Amino acid sequence: MSVSPMDSSVGASRTVAPRLFLFGNGIYGDHVAGGDVHFLEVAKRAHSAGYSLHFFGGKALEKRLSKLGVPYGLTLTNDHVLDKSCEQSFGGQLVLFFDYFKRLCRSLRRLRQIRAEDFAYAMADGWFDVLPVALSRAKGKMMILHMEAPTLRQILCRSRPDVDTFRVAALHYWMSQQLALRLFRASRHKHIFHVHPNMRARLLKLGFKENEISYVSYGLDAETADTVPEPGKIYDAVWIGRIHRQKGIEDLLQTLAGLARELPDFRAIIIGRAGEALASQIKNLGLSQQVEFSGFVSEEEKVRLLKASRVFLMPSRHEGSPRTVGEALLCHLPVVAYDVETYRPIFGDLVRYVPCFDLEKFKAEAKEQILKMRAGENYLARTDLKQFRKENSWATVGEVFCNALARLR
Image 1: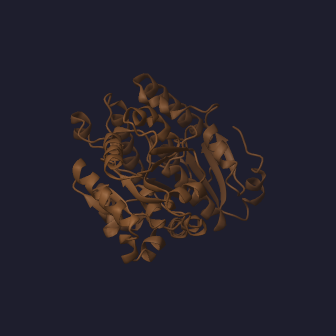
Image 2: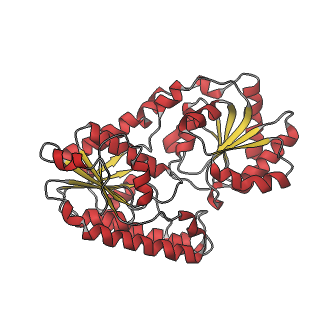
Image 3: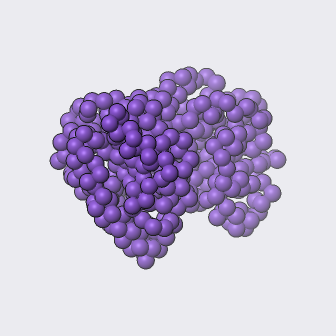
């Protein structure tokens, strides 16, 4: 067990503040995923509401907690940072599985830290987080469902784009979610959050009660979007994401190539470290002069680059609740996306949708929106983003989370 230098506050304040134990065994490496951001943000909101925080997780979580800005305790469940990119190989997936198992065992051995008057929260639906929460003595137990796992049929037929060739990771995801939801359903005094409206029906079908379920947004930093000044338009197109077949990378590259041929002075920016992996393909397409790579950037710089662009390209073939689309909309940046089934319940008419995986129509819509933006016409100027901003702000996310905590007290 390792405790952060700020952990003294846990022991000192536990008689006057309710304790919240947060399990983040699924945080790996330096890549910050949307679920990680959500996890740390709700922790800060719970602290503001008067809860004392104590985390279970690995060295990667320890590194991120050093920037949390509030007192916390930490129980380390591994001794080193394991790069989750190892899951790209079959052997790496096995390494990752055994590391999960080790984290679970260390969590279970330290579980007596949680008393009957405490609260526990699993940051995701992984068995390595949900099992300790379900087995703990906490009087209030919570978990969050960030994304629907592929069905067994989708895995066997490889009909969902996030199922890789080996299928091992997808099978693990499916079994883990099945186990986690059923195990958590058997707990008393529980609450489960879901980040997409369509998930509600499944949870009710599994046996969760209406008062045990809450929809919570994936969360957006509206304050940063408001404070970063408009830099003027530099780029015609922008993309941010990770390199995975579900992200529609080939369609992205073909769209950039087509736009570069048809639009004079075309420029695009790819944000984040993942984009650098596309450098050789960009060069082969003859786009080195038109496409830039930002590398890793701060949140403020990401917002600045979004505001400096005319259209956000979203050629993904499968998504849950993509924060990147919401971030673009907060920056009043038009979004062109394939009409996958998960988007409309969240974004409504704020996105310009294209029939799924019709590359020619995707390129045509992207070109049309760029030309309109070059002429000073932004379709978002005719929409009202106030309700969208409110529903997806961190303030609303924190309110939903803390309200659920209060009902479990």
